Length: 183
Image 1 (tube, helix red, strand yellow):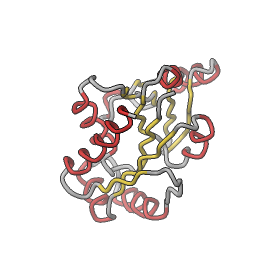
Image 2: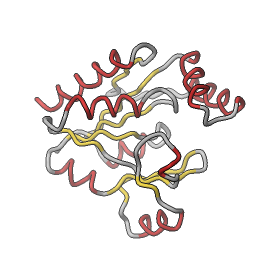
Image 3: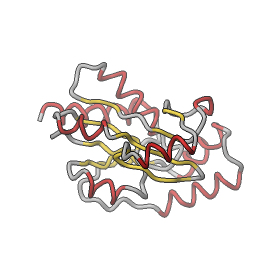
C-alpha cells in the first residue's frame, strides 16, 4: 500500500506551487503520482490545474460513487476521484492538495496518510493573496484570520515553512517524497 501525502494549508500558502515543483523535480522517475481534483470552478479561473465540472456533473459523479473524497469550501465543490485508491493499493505514493477541514475524514478513509502542512506567516499570506488579486480586502483579512486559527494536531504531520524562496520549501517537500519512495 502506498502513502497518501495530503497537502494542506491556507489558500495562498503555496501548496500548488510546491506540488508543481515536486512534480517537475521527480520527473516521473519515482513511485509518486499527483492527484488532480474535480472542482466546480471554470478551468479558465486560474490557480491549480483541475478538472472543471458543472454542479450537475459533480452531483452525478457523487451519486455514482466516483469520488474518494468530496467537500465544499468557499462556494465551490471539490472531489478526488476513486483512482487515488487504486494507485495506493498498487503501491504508488500519491500527492494530493487536500482540505484542512476534511483531514479527519480523509484520515479515516485512508489510514496510510501523512499530512503535509504548509505554513506561512500572516504577513506573507496577506501579501500573496493581495498579489493574486482574486479576493477583496475583506476576504483577504478573513482568510488570514482563519489561517491563524486552524491547527493540524495530527501527530504524523510534517510541517514545512514556506515564507522564503519557493526552492527552500520545495527541496524539503521533494526530500520527503523521495524518502517515502525508498522505504
